[in-house]
Length: 274
Image 1: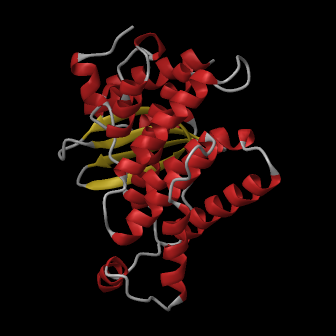
Image 2: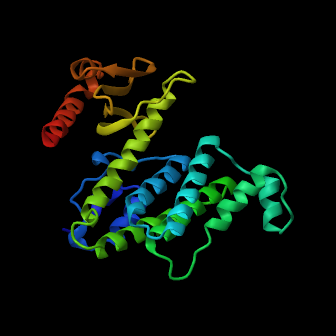
């Protein structure tokens, strides 16, 4: 089944790249993004998405040396995300001019940059983790990380297509999971923005409903959390609110203007999953 027209308009740019790399018969039917506007993800979330892509291929890394190297590169990217290390602009320019950088942060960024260099004929899983390192390095320099991740998702698709049957997820499954992961990352960021500083952000198992707000991007969400609870991000009156609780409690908190559509969409997905 091909996917054209309005269905593409609900795609994140990385999903569009993945759909273009897939054969028509490999593309899951739309709509994508639960039929809402294209998901919006911050740069650190996209780097996290890159790590998710690599995790799918990591079991296929062979050889003790490559396994250790891949783990170390992935751990460096996680450290980068954890510390949100970003080079000052002057340092980024200095590196471009070949000047020496001496602080530990400078060398950490240099290692990400060094590890991102492609190696000819390297196996796809290693190539993907290097692309993820390149995305982190680009984020640290304040440059566009999208090309690194577009190449990564394309390589994942080629790898899965050529994998022996039963040894990895199929391309169609990957595309569906990629769409769901982008929406889940977007929802998790919306939850984080509504929590007090220092409060851990719950892990989102699945987004059941998302709705655009006044900014023409998804701002209202219903999600199932990893611990089994449900959660709602919405605006009640003039105040944005995070509601966490049992299913009925969460659904009862949905504003009237969204209640029918939100309840119908959320229950349809729950029924389909069951």
